[in-house]
Amino acid sequence: MNQALQLLLERTSSPRLQQPAPSAEQLELLFRAALCAPDHGQIRPWRFLVVEGQGLVELGELYASALLQNNPAASTEQLRRAQAMPLRAPMIIVLIACLQEHPKVPEFEQIIAAGCAGHGILLAAQAMGLGAFWRSGEFCNNAVVANGLGLQENEKLIGFMYLGTPSQPAKPASRPAPAAFVGHWPPPGLEPTRPQA
Image (tube, rainbow, N blue to C red; front, side):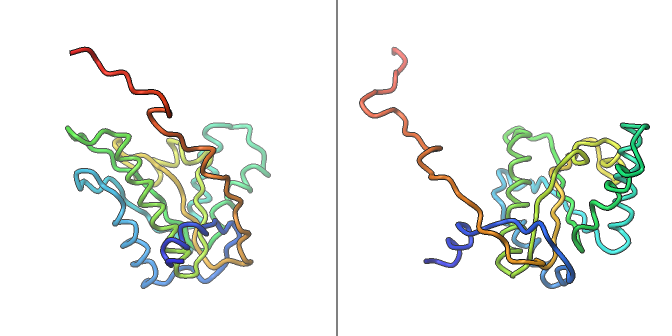
């Protein structure tokens, strides 16, 4: 089987990650893959933040602040869990959609393009033997987190890409049969209705 096709068919997430994080050379390749995403209008509606080292601790503190803002009665254990969340991997790439006014590229297309860029990072990571896991969760739609990360009004967090070295082999993902999601139009034996001239 073609290697690129095999990579697509066997892609899986690696939720258990450890050091080392991607090297500078690997990180460059990850972003080069991201920038190959389909991009109507070539407006590049995305940007990325790399978080590692002390930055992961600070991101955990930001999560805890966001939790307290939304729930002043949060328990010590809830705060501790929020602080520990970014420490599940040696590196996180924050995925950001940068939404622009454009006469031919609506907002939903720009968000999809940014999502495709994230998928490029996932595939490139797996191709290099790295582990990756795309997380969203409550802090992905949190104004305190967005402000703390420096997002502008026209920007939207679309996920946190956890990266590192898999601590154990990833389990093969179960895939449903494509037929459950695929139809044909017009249905067999039925011609589409055409407007009267």
